[in-house]
Amino acid sequence: MAPETLALDSKEIGKKFGYSYAVRNVSLQVRRGEFVVLFGSNGAGKTTFLKVAATLMRPTSGTLAVEGFDIGSQPEEARRRIGFLSHNTFVYRDLSPLDNLKFFCRLYGVKDSEERLLGILERVDLKARATEPVRAFSRGMQQRVGIARALLHDPSLILLDEPYTGLDARAAQTLNGILDEAVAAGKTVVLTTHDLDQGLRAATRAIILDRGTVVLDSPARGPGIREAYTRYIHQGDGR
Amino acid sequence: MKPVAAIVFKDIAIEYKNKEAFSSMVLFGLLVVVVFSFAFEGSDRKALAPGMLWVAYSFAGILGLNRSLSMETDNDCLQGLLLSPMSRGDLYLGKVGGNLAFTMLAELVILPFFVILNNLAFDTSLIWIAGITLLGTLGFVAIGTTLSLISAQTRMKEVMLPVLQIPMTFPVILSAVQATSLVMSGDSSGVAFPLSLLGIFSTVYITASYFVFEYIVEE
Image (tube, rainbow over the protein chains, first blue to last red):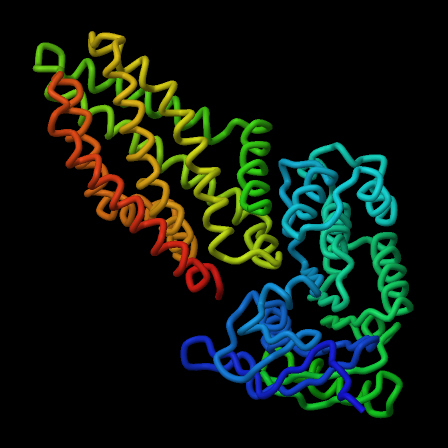
């Protein structure tokens, strides 16, 4: 039987800034359809790891593949399969949500029909304001445009870095609904958050990073998650 | 080439909406031309005018590059571009295309004012000057686009860009001034040498930047 292609396969990934490691020897195998939540205190290496996985950062050591495509030798193929959302939305404030989505469609080489894009904007409750400049939107609304941008090309691996930052309850609910649909459709989600309950809501697997290394990797409903969270994040914060 | 064109059109669309870069480039370029025109009153205009024109173009160009950079750093939009499945080299070409479009447009507005204020003739030499402007501007934005990204990673990015840009584009500016000077003097027989220098520098800057761009933009 052929080996299963992993959604994300990192081997001994390390990332150094100056003399210190932000991520050290992280080996992580994420199967297709998994919903993985990464917890960690500030500076634990969550964002760095996701940025390496999203090909935004070059790792200092190790290899990482997305859906079987190595990010070093086939970065374009890997990026085509990744949807990345962070607390920054990466959308142009001078353009409308519709113009932003049309632009990113052209970058990804996907269909940019207005009908399809309005459908995506409807999913994030922004259809009625599709042609207004993003500059006029609240933080939460801008983040919803960011969600639409991240999922525009129907990525199979969704990477979310603190996606709930700045979201109001309604927008957080919209995001949760979208993530639930994505998981039901067999997509893979890797999410970082500080919020234990929000993180464990739909996750199938929980990982805790501490000072750049994985200190816990367990099923999300497994025993000891809350204790480990308290130990490494509450008590470890500001170390 | 679709993503390259998409970036160029996106830059034009944003500029069309806010007109920030174009208006500041034109205004600043015109101010330089006006100030120099009065400052050099009574001097040999034909000798000084080419330098004056390229100083105006350079200052306006640096303003445009700074604005183009802030368009991408605002809201971390550059990261959004880097996430797309296009090569870093194509991203560079798209940004060069956008920067070239604005800078050329601003220069096309500055040029007639320069001709009027310096009592020059609207004749065929203007076509030559427009050609030299295109080639010189290409070299200017080719390296400027890369340097603006390098300066973005420093603390004093607005200051750092001109500090890096002016020395790096010195050969381009010098060749362009020389070519403009020859055309304005009516003796265009020696213009081939500065024009070929402009062509060589533009090619070197574009080729080198195309291949090193990924190391500049990735953290």
